[in-house]
Amino acid sequence: MKSIIEKIKKIDKLYHVKGCTTSQVKEAQSELGLEFPEEFIDYVKEYGAISFYGTEWTGLNVNGYLNVVEATKQEREFNSEFPTDCFVLENQAIDGLITAVNNSGNVFTIQYNKKIPLCDSISEYLDICIARKK
Image 1 (cartoon, one colour):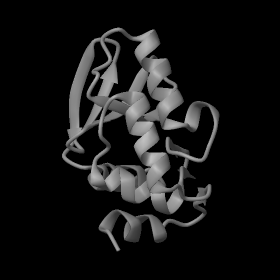
Image 2 (cartoon, helix red, strand yellow):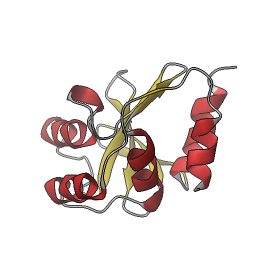
Image 3 (cartoon, helix red, strand yellow):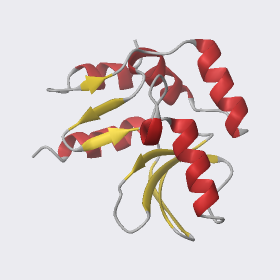
């Protein structure tokens, strides 16, 4: 098991949908014109999309704002500065604040035309999200 999966398993009161298939991942990547990092693929194959402690991560096997394809396409439509090599992991729903991830798995805070490095991996960002409970 991957470390991100082990971390997610330990979250109390975790809500998630059904995990997705490899073909669903490939279809989503094709629609967005990018490749997801391995951690994101591991996560969506196991959990689909998750919610915990006021945190909602995008994923697959879910419709609407939590669907990674829909959320990313919408952000690209609303924000012409949104990087094409990134996808939406979490929409903070505060003043256009988006948590995005690039092909390499680096996590950024994006707000309109500002792109600020946040973490080197999704797993590292997960630690920040888990700490919100405290």
